Image (cartoon, rainbow, N blue to C red; front, side, top):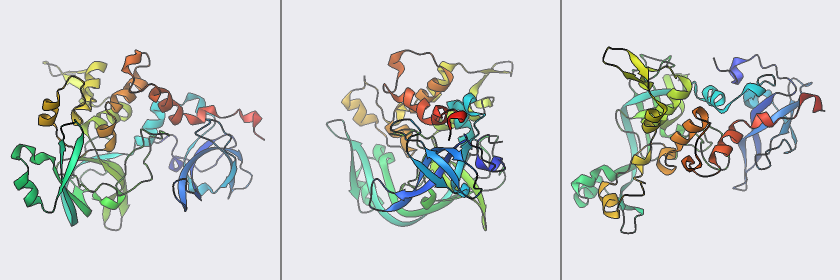
Length: 354
């Protein structure tokens, strides 16, 4: 059962509880009003229809972002004041991710081909892309061994997963799940504010997943059956990280011995399973010729492509507190990761709320 999700409670919010809520406000990137996800602490619950909330400012890391009135229906997650002292980044991620459902793709239907691209490494060592009008022209122009770097982009696509459950939390086994481009989104695990939740940007992935590739997301039941309300193309590395956090007793985290029994993998072995550098060939000792020869473009979530070893860093931060400085992804990530996920632990004392 989710510990902090709104659905798990009777919606009886108390003074001192911390909440994540949707707020209709002016966009910081465009001259429009839009819904954004905000954090805050309840300071007045006397009105059952509107809660007064002190807003948490991510820049100052304090509850000094002003006051606002919040409709309880706009609250997406909340943290009871009595549970806040015991919260950890692992518990928060486990709560947010416990409902993520993993499946393999069974079939994909595409609509309106947009462009065909070929990715390669240029003589300066940078990833570059060439466009072709048709897939046939791309295949005829690109060496056969590089055809894996050719991608067809579509303006729209949809598909269905297989029936097989990947992890034990999948309560929808023996049913396929529908997915579409418009619901595509990814988890926010990097950037200025690390939330661990889905980002607000949707539908940006123009390359559909391939058959048997992992997808992951939140599932709902619609008029025509199950569908992913939010989903993303999923790497095996993220699946391993999720398993560490949400199903740590799963057999995939263990080695099978000759006598048929299982022993838990060491931290070093699991960190190897979380290594995403193969997607970018970012090893410092590789030569330019080797990079150009061995480069392959992958269709997985952006985190594993553009932030090398991010899942190893998260695992070390959560499961192995003591480590040397040279293991850092970059100097401030560990501190920001814990800070952004456990922002509610900076809440003021209940007796100081007025």
